[in-house]
Amino acid sequence: MSAAPAQAAPSHTFTAEDVGFIDGGDQAGAAGRIAAMDDYVGAKTPIVRLDLFWADVQACATCPPRWGRLDALVGAAAERGVRVLLILDYTTSWANGGRPSNWFPTDDRAWAGIVEAAVAHFGDRVQAYEVWNEPNITAFGNYGDNSVDVRARRYWELTRIAYQKVKAGCPSCVLLAGGSAAGDVVTVNGGQVNDNEAGDWLEWAYGHGFGDTFDAVAYHPYPDWGGGNRPTYAPEPCNVNWFRWWSGFGPDDTGCGGLAYLRDVMVRHGGAANGNLVLYPHAGGSPWASGTVRP
Image 1 (cartoon, rainbow, N blue to C red):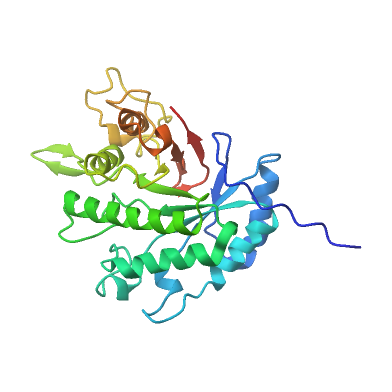
Image 2 (tube, rainbow, N blue to C red):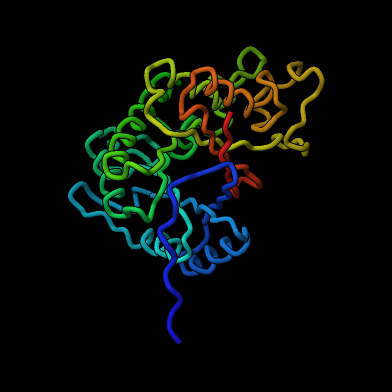
C-alpha cells in the first residue's frame, strides 16, 4: 500500500478563523500531539507555536546552530500541513554578556545572525516568527537598569532587526511583536501602578519610530487574576476600584479592558496592517489558542 501523498505547503495567510496551539510537552510525543491538534479543529488548518530557546540551539559564538529538537517538531507539523509560529526567544549567555537567558541580547550581530539562520534553515516550513515571549514583563525580558524606557527601547530595536532579517529571507512570512501581557504591577504610595502594560509598551513603539517594524502584535489576555470571574467582567463603573491590567480581556472599554486598550492603541496609530492582533487566550498559565482580530 503506497503512502498518502504529502500535503501542499501550508498557506502564509492568517485570518480571524485561525486556531493555534502551543506544544510544551516532551518531544517524543510531539508528532502525535500535533496530529491530534489538527484532527481536533476539523476543517481548519491549525497553527502550532514553538519556542526557539536560543540558549539550547547555539552553545557558542562560533558553533553552528543545532536544529535537531526544532526540526523534529517543525517536520511533524509540515507532515500535516500545520503552520508554525516560531518564537525567537531566550538569549544564549555569550550574546548577552554572560547573563541569564531572560536578558535581552546585547550583541546585535549575534541576534541578527540567529534570526537569519533560522529563516534560512526552516524556509517555508515556518510561516510566522514572533520576537520574544512577554517582553514587557521583567521576569522574561531584562535589560540595562530595567527601567521601562531602557527595556522597551532594546526590545523594539531587536524587533526591527528581526523584521529586516525575516523579510529578507522570507518576504511572505509574518513577523509578530509582543504587546504581550499585563506587565509589572508595583505599589506606589499605597496604590497600584503599571507603566509597562501591553498597551503602554506598544504606545512606546509607535511614539519612538518603531511602528513599521512588525506585521501584527501578539497579546496574552489572561482573564481576571484570581477572581474567578468571566473574561468580560468588570464592576460598574469599571474604572472605580478596578485596574485595566487585572483582566487582559475585560469589557470593550479602554478604561478597564486590557484588550480594548491595546487594540485602541493600534487603531489610533493605524499600524500593524491596520490593527492585526494575534491573541493567545491563557488558561492555567498556558496559551492554548489564537486568532487574529481586525478593527
